[in-house]
Amino acid sequence: MKHNEHIIPGEQHWEKENMEEGFVLWFTGLSGSGKTAVAERVAVILEREYGQLVERLDGDIVRQYLTYDLGFSKEDRDKNIERVSYVARLLSRNGVCVLAAFISPYAERRNKIRDMVTNFIEVYVKCPVEVCEGRDVKGLYKKARDGIIENFTGISDPYQEPEEPELVLETDRETIEESVDKVISYLENKGYV
Image 1 (cartoon, helix red, strand yellow):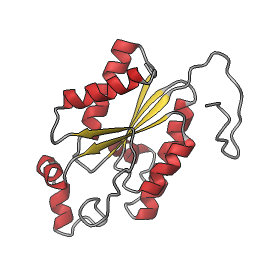
Image 2 (spheres, rainbow, N blue to C red; image 1 turned 90 degrees about the vertical axis):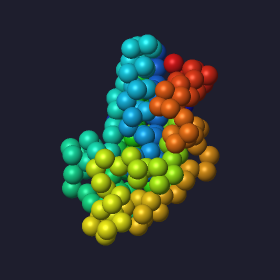
Image 3 (cartoon, rainbow, N blue to C red; image 1 turned 90 degrees about the horizontal axis):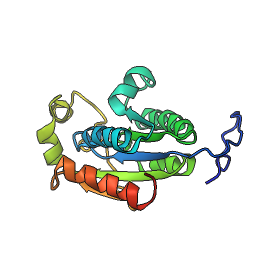
């Protein structure tokens, strides 16, 4: 893919000779499914064993610094993901391997990311809500069930499962190491690393 295939109005574009493009591993799934845990380990392997330039974008951290002004309505969630995908786009087109871990519950928004960023790889971190709830150290699911948190994905707001993700990690059936191995094997087989 050329750097200028998906031009966003107002951006300056230039061709960089011999510049390797990065990729975006987009981890999507319910809260507590294991997105962050897998992304953290994959990032370490990519940096240490493959010498890749890696940046992690994580929902909790991004909401502290980049999208702190947004709530959890559908409109705000879409705006959150729109901002993050723009950052992922800038990084990936400049040779960075981006590991983005976001619930990103809406298929339409994930498809827009696919169209926007360089080398998009959708990773569905699949895990039943009951298992995610059991892992919930922050007590968010309980608060959602008690009506304290509104628009909580998987409880009072829908999660639209990806129809054709590049990878599916079943974190209720596989260890973190097995999930990480699946991601690394995919990247090797597709020539990303």
